[in-house]
Length: 143
Image (cartoon, rainbow, N blue to C red; front, side, top):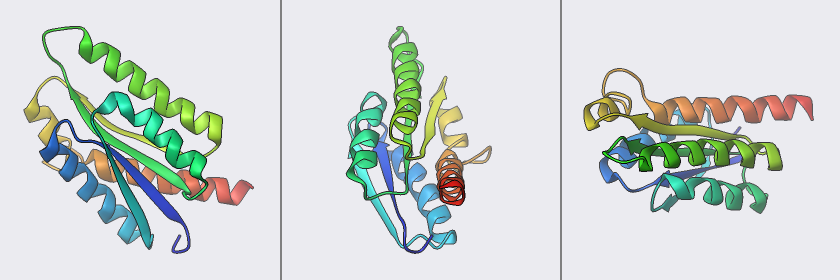
């Protein structure tokens, strides 16, 4: 892993959550002996797929961890953003062959988000980094 680079694209709409997710992902990359991790912030979760595509198509990265949070509100906006972010990130991986992991919290409230960003239940940043590292390993094994 030391000679491979990975990217993190992170939605900054919820700054504190974004920082926590990136911190968790960085820990996993460090534990996996990844020396190069580049972080690319984007405004929100809707922009993650395009940023992931830019990273994947650059040819510089073995994988892309996509991080962010979408918190349910009073309108249907949540449903559209969650669906399009998930669909778009999956499509980038399938279209390019570059692993892209989904580390986007899709929660009802801030308490749930904090709990899943290293606050007790899980760490979606860590989970996304583990997933993309494993998929990059699998790709290397098979190609």
